[in-house]
Amino acid sequence: DGRPTAVTIHADRPGPVYDRRIFTQFAEHLGHGIYGGLWVGNDRSIPNTNGFRNDVVAALRNLSVPVIRWPGGCFADEYHWREGIGPKARRPVKVNTNWGGVTEPNSVGTHEYFELLRQVGAEAYISGNVGNGTPQEMAEWVEYITAPAGSLADERAKNGHKQPWALPAFGIGNELWGCGGNMRPEYAADVTKRYATFIKVPAGTKTVKIASGANGDDYNWTEVMMREAGKHLDALSLHYYTLPQGGWPPKADPVDFDETGWADTLAATWRMDDLIAGHSKVMDKYDPAKRVFLAVDEWGTWYAPDPGTNPGFLRQQNTLRDAMVASVNLDIFAKHADRVRMTAIAQMVNVLQAMILTEGRKMVLTPTYHVFEMYKPWQDATVLPIDIDTPWYNKDRFVMPAVSGSAVRAKDGKVHVGLSNLDPNQSNMVTVKLDGLNAANVSGRILTASAINAHNSFDAPQVVKPAAFTGAQIANGVLTVALPPKSVVVLELR
Ligand code: AHR
Image (cartoon, rainbow, N blue to C red; front, side, top):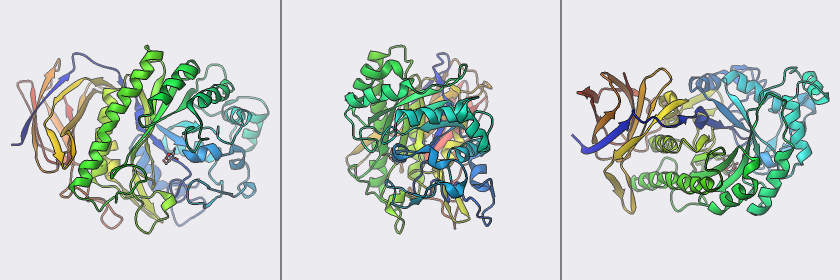
C-alpha cells in the first residue's frame, strides 16, 4: 500500500566521503547548554567525573560525537580565554551579555573543555574572539593549547596539562556580520586574513581555519570572503536555522502545533538544499578544486522558548517534527558532501534543537538524538548517489518532496539507506533499484510516533524511540520499503 515512489541507488558510482565532522555538536555558554547540562562541578548529588555529568557523557559517547564546537556562537566574540584558566576561585565572574544577562563563572574553560572532549571521545573545534579580542590574544590561546615548549606551554603544564592538545579546527570569530562585530564582508575578509595570519601551530600538526560565513542566503558574503580571503582559509561557515511562522524572531511553539506548523517547518528545512547549492556555486568560482570546505556549523530548529523558561536560554522541547528536520538535513548534506565536510547542529544539550534535555538530576534523549544515533553508520562512509522520484507533500501553501533519503557504503562494506516520509497522512511504497549492488538481506529500524508533536519528557522518556522495522524486503535485486507516514527509516543491506 501507499503512493508509489521510485528510487535508484548508484552503488556503481560511489561519491565523496560523508565526513564524520558533519555530526559535529555545538556547545555554547548559553543557558543550560554547559552549566547544568554538561557541567555540574562539585555538585555531588549528580554523578559526575571531573565535573561532567556521567549520564550526559555516556549518552554522547553512544552517539560517537566526532567534534564539539565551543565556546560559542555569539559568546565566542566576547570570550577571553585567560579568564577560564588557573585556580577556579581566581577566575573572574562575568556577565553573559548575549544570553540572559546571567553570570558566567568561568568554571568551564580551556582545560575543562579538553577534559569533556576526552570523556566524550571527540575532537576540538574552538571559535576564537575576533569581536573584542586581539590577534595577539587569539594567537596566544592557540599557542597555549598546542605548543610543546615555551612559557605558555609551561603555564599550561602548571595548570595541570603538560602535553599539548590537538586542535584540528579553529574558527576565526563567529557571525562577523552580526553579534561578532556587525561588519561588512569587505571588512570582515580583511580582519579574517589578519587574525588567520597569526594562528600558528607546531610543525607536523594541522589546524583547519574556518572563517565566519554567511547568514542564510547572503551569497554576497560568500563571494567577498572567497575572493578576498579564500586563499588563507580552509573552510567557510554557513548558518541557517529552520524558523517556521515567517522567520525572525522565532515565534512557533515547539510542541503545540498543527499540520500547518509541521509542513511550514519541514518546507523551511528543505531550503538548506538550495542554500548549500547557492553558496557552493559561488565557492566553485574561486575554488573549483573544492579545497575550501563549507562548514554549516549552525543549523536546526529555532522556536519560541518553552513556556516558563528564561527566553535568553533558548530552551525548547523537541518532537517528531525535529527528528524529520534532522534526517532531511543529514540527507541534504550527503548530496553536497563534496563541499560540505563539517556541520554542527545547534546545540548539543538544553539549547535549541538539542540531543539531550536535562533538569537537575533528570535527563531525557530527544527524537533528534535518535536520528543522530540511527545515522551513525554515515560517519566517514562513502556516499552512494541516490535518485528519488518522490511524490509531493503539500499542506496549505507549503509544498515539498514527501520522501527524503540518502545512501552510504560504510567502511565495513555494508550499505545503509535512510528514508524519511514527511507526509503525516499517507504512506509510500518505495521501490529501490540497486545499481551495482548485490544485496540479499535487509534489516532496519524506524522512528515514528502516533502524533506529529510526540516528544519525550522526563515523565515519559520513551514516547519517541527507534523500533525494529519489518517493512522492507529484497527480492530479485530490488528493495521494497513500505514507508509509513511521518517516519524515519534506516536500513542496512547485506
Ligand atoms: O545558537 C545560538 C546563536 O545563534 C549563536 O550564538 C549565534 O552564532 C547564532 O546567531
